[in-house]
Length: 307
Length: 109
Image 1 (cartoon, rainbow over the protein chains, first blue to last red):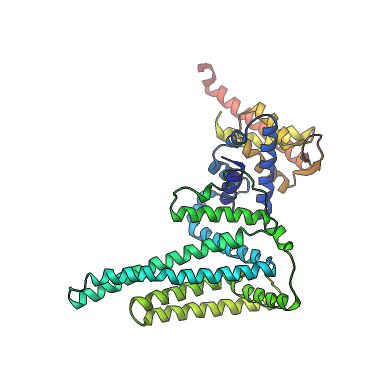
Image 2: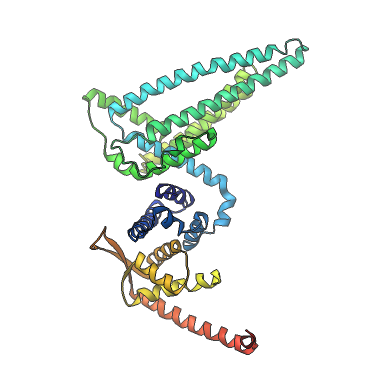
């Protein structure tokens, strides 16, 4: 295992600790590995001496009086916290970009949207052809089969869209550092190659992104070239403000609600004509969004700024 | 050695080893490693907790080779804590030893 992987894994297991505590502990381990290497041991050997990472993390958490077995029961809770944290970090990262970077990002996003709309065609066509194969069946069976096929096609479509957007955020926002870091170690790019499934690749990307964001998030906030005229800066400021409203840390909850609402509405709309249920869910999503937004705004006015 | 035993006395041993002289993490771990076989990784969180509990404090000191090292120093409250802990341990070890003798099991080994 390389140092990079070690830090990555340990960071993942210790998310319950505050960032400062984690940084402190990891710094100590890095120093320890350095000294071991000075003694002539290899990096892998030094890391192997720490034993099993899960056990190590358990012991660290125990030192903070956190019982990891109880924590295990709230996996979903933690997963959601991690994701919200992730969206928040993406937003923070985005705010640190310069005008030029944002303009490029916007153009790339448009291309991505175009790609997504093009991607719909082959999948929908497949669903069309597939459903014609059942045209000889009685109307009731044919119609229900058709609905199911379109539903599946749309699910595939949505999954692809999610993966692509997630990938886009990771590659373009999380990895886009104003000052390119020196690659920590070999093996850090292993995540990109190999025939791993999309799921595990996404997981790897997210791990890498989280680690990178952690390392460079702070410096990135202050860095970035400030170019462009007043008008561009003004436009960027407006874009930034609107982005804070939609993807800022409190906005993460809003975004999730909105996405879930609209996604469900969309799927049901295409699946069964004008889906009344879909519209209802969308409405609920929008309502939650509005409530979340209002409460966030109240919090903001009360002096709790998040951006 | 039984891992539960180790866990129990590790704190005492760590405190004892910095009682007379400030040490940095790696040095401390090497010393503790001579007394008992312990996972190197677990001493750092223990130190961290001792610092959080204000039994220890840290300071950075430049070293001849490499970057600055973080030294651990026993505070006054740490010293009191160590005293209590040592007394407790001696009493506890005494009781356990006596109990072993009473049971007569030590002759059978």
